[in-house]
Amino acid sequence: MATADLNNLKTDLSRRMDGAMETLRREFSGLRTGRAHPGLLEPVKVIAYGSETPLNQVGTIGTPEPRMLTVQVWDKSLVTAVEKAIRDSGMGLNPSADGMLVRVPIPQLTTERRNELAKMAHKYAEGAKISVRAVRRDGMEQIKGFEKKHEIGEDLAKNWSDEVQKLTDQFIKKVDEALADKEKDIKQV
Image 1 (cartoon, rainbow, N blue to C red):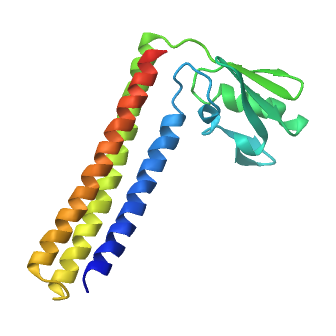
Image 2 (tube, rainbow, N blue to C red):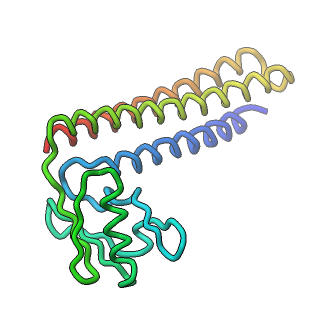
C-alpha cells in the first residue's frame, strides 16, 4: 500500500471536485449577464407531454444577435408551453412566439439586478466550495482509516493529508477565479 493508493485516492477526489466545478459552471451559465447565451435558458423546464422537460429537449436554442435568444420549437403544440416556461422562469424575460420560433429579447440589466446576480454567484460559489471541502473531508477520513488499520504509517498519512489539502486549495482557487470572472461579466455589460 503506497503511491498507487495515493494516486487512486487523488484521482477519485479530483474527479469529485471536478464535478463540483462543473456544477458551478452550469449554475453560472444560468445567470443572466445582459448578453444572450444559450446556457441562459438551460435551467428552464417546459411542461411537455405531461412531464417537466428541459427546454433544450423540445427545441433548438440559438443566439442570432448579442441581445436576443431564439428557441426553434420542434412541436407546434409546445410553442405556448415554451413561451410560458420562459416567462415564468424568474429571469425577467419576456418571450414572444412567431410561428414555431420563440424570440427572447435580453433586456439591459439594472444596477439592482446586477447586485442580485452577484449575490447569487457568490451563493453558487460558496456551495461549490462546500462541496469541495466535503470531498476533502472524505479523503481525510479515508487516510485516517488506512492509518488506524496500520496500512500506512503516521508519516505517510501526513504526506497524503498534505497532498489532499493541496488539491483542495487548487480547487478552491479555481472556484474563486470562476467567481471573479462571473462578477466581472455581470458588472461589465
